[in-house]
Length: 355
Ligand code: NAD
Image (cartoon, rainbow, N blue to C red; front, side):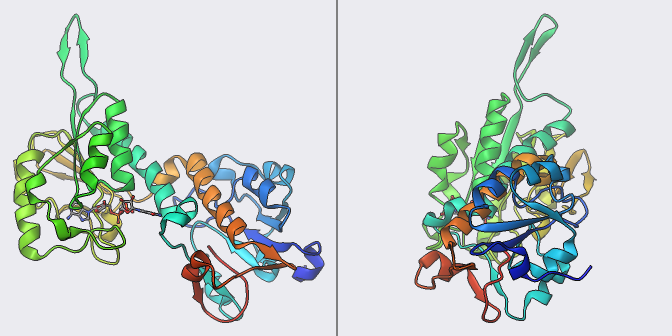
């Protein structure tokens, strides 16, 4: 079937928006959920790829009821002016001629559009459940006629968005929680979710960049940090590591020397596995046994809870599209707007976008 042009497809004044079905193995999320499709349909003519939301719990019928049309991917490739997906499709480079690629800025005003934060919240929660399933113990204290079980000790290294959610989740499940981050501002946040902030003596005032992220530490700083942490880590049952430095390999927080000190049965869930890992033995998406310590490096945790992860991702995309706005059948890319100017990575002139 010949691909129809946007003008033939999209009712006047609306922008043809293609919603992709993800193709990466293990990826179950979808970038827009039916409730957001409904909210966007006044400005966008939404073409949802067949089966786009099926693995996140949303049927083609749900999308159609929300106002979209179900189409094969070829139709999206040929006529959508805006394409949304969790991951860029392999044919994204074909958009280069006359396309604008959108990526997301991390500023306070853009918080509602920040997919990294929304997905990190889900991942932090899922990491605790993943670790708990591998532990030889339960998390809460239990008093029974057969005896008393002490609560598990959980440590989170890296108290950003995922780390704070992991701390809050572990505490809700009854664990005694401990947190650490190199950013001084994180101390108050760790304490606000009921955890103890450990090793504050090694937190340096200059570890935070102006953007609020951690800066890379020197080799000596990293070494003294590892030694200061190892004393605390040996008392833990579950350790969740999330430490990342934007644009750099993940810092090494747990080396072979520390691994050898950990209690038998300790489980480490390393959320930095994709960028090299926070331990010396992490392997992405594998379970590694070092002595009696289990190290997990899951990289698809958000897909475990694909429905809710998609709801949040979709909320981010909807807020982004509403912020950008549509005028005369095209995205309104107002370069003087600080969010729009920050998110435009110009490939060429035009208005097709892939958030
Ligand atoms: P991230 O995923 O880049 O890193 C996770 C955590 O690891 C960070 O807290 C970082 O400080 C920590 N870390 C780095 N090196 C470490 C080390 N050697 N030891 C221990 N911890 C180390 O960070 P993130 O979760 O995306 O966000 C970090 C901060 O930025 C948070 O305070 C968050 O609230 C803020 N933020 C703001 C916005 C916004 O304003 N829109 C958006 C996202 C994040």
